Length: 390
Image (cartoon, rainbow, N blue to C red; front, side):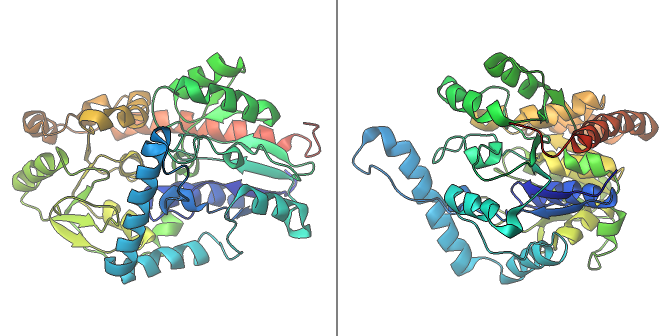
């Protein structure tokens, strides 16, 4: 295949281990195929910093402005009280491993101005993966993450494994999504539920492809960059809540007689679970690799456990957060590993699962099939003429 210059738009900037793993996976796979792949450094402030307040006196804007206020306060708290070491390790990873060295683009106008410049010429643009199609309370759907943009020239527009984050899309966003997808050449999503969402709203056929971490499959190059980490621990990677996962992790630790370690999380609002550690993103992957057991409520924590063949349990998010379990349940179903999913706080099922072995050879066969789907789709899209007419 002829080498092409490819621009990637995703959450490469997030202070979230999983987001950085999927960003690394997509770019590294493209590099391994001989392409020039780089991130378009779109980093809108609404994603993690809140964005701007609007219509403060309007009751209809209350929920949006409440989210803005929460994220602004969280950002201030991180700056004042967060781990400087962790922040530096994330920044080093983005610069040295992901290759992000260009100026930050904060809005759609700046992205389009970049594409109009000499340095913004690409043969293909890829949006994905992660939850870039999950509407935010502040922004809704962002046209940049659908490549619904001016000045992209003859670049082929390819969606690779974007996620809606849950099994449905609110009807209020359907019109925007239908419009934004009109210019997409290659259309894929990460979950089967996303296939149905796109088909229902646009009538277009969509391919279900694996997350970029699975697309890449081999994280040995990244592990080789990791700082030294211990071994034999129970690795607890919790996002959004400590409820339910604390009880499961404690039972695993007591049964195995192993120490619990948990990576520092800038968004944590719950009492720490075990010993807090401060790994780099490569070190995070290494801590999974060196663990005796992994307990997580995270999609990417589950993926890395599977890829590195670590015994694990995925704990469902409880209550109102339960809709976010769609992503990991879809993955475990594809791998015939639904028995590794336990409800929050279910220590009895945890006790039973601890004594059950995982058939890694059977899992490997299913992973190979998923990888073939993703690699065939992306390779076929990149073989298409870059100058296709929108």
